[in-house]
Amino acid sequence: GLQLVLAALGSALLGSIPFSLLIARFAGGIDLRKVGSGNVGATNVARTLGWKWGTLALLCDAAKGVVPVLLFPALMTTASPGLDNERVLCGVCAILGHMFPPWLGFKGGKGVATALGVVTVLAPAGTGIACLAFIVTFALSRIVSLSSIVAALSYAIAEVVLHGSDLWGPQTWGLGAFAIAIPLLIIYRHRTNIVRLWHGQEPRLQLKKKTGE
Ligand code: NKO
View 1 (cartoon, helix red, strand yellow):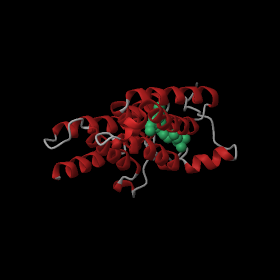
View 2 (cartoon, helix red, strand yellow):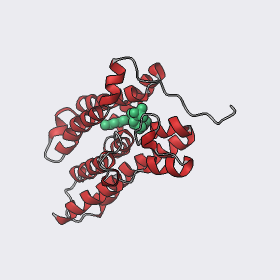
View 3 (cartoon, rainbow, N blue to C red):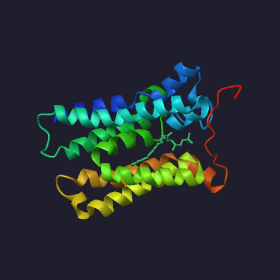
View 4 (tube, rainbow, N blue to C red):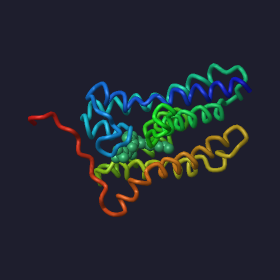
């Protein structure tokens, strides 16, 4: 109904706030689209302004996933008992808002931080496994894009292994569809990174150091 449409629109609107771009602009006077990888994400903030601003960008972009999923379904009077499918809808809309913000000509981020916020609420166990996969891959490679791709794949596999056919029940099919579609979309958003990885040209993360250090 109308509540569902409003919840979806509100989630997409929150998701479309380009926190990483805004933080880079106000903290460093930098247009994130013109430096480093050109991506409006936390990694590119860390690359150009250091780990503190990168962490703030990660937290803000993740909050865009957490807040709508917790807030809008809870406000609905017509939601289904478990709220799962309503939460998935809000989470998907927040991620799509982040990836395709109207204010930036629909050229947004890759969805990793916002999806992290969403799955932290939707599926904490699968999120834990995805974070472990990220940490192990990053420790071995120092490449964020590769770590994000491995984490997204690990989330999909973990959800299928942990929940199996429960993921496709009438109340929970949204969680199953999300667990397959969102990792695929995140990986697709990394397609230019994948080309560089394939050619051995994807840079390891180099954090911006204070001048003089
Ligand atoms: O600039 O192209 P770039 O090198 O910046 O950036 C590539 C990068 C883009 O993403 C970001 C956000 C970085 C977030 C890092 C912390 C993520 C930790 C855990 C990941 C869990 C993912 C769950 C996905 C569930 C579907 O990749």
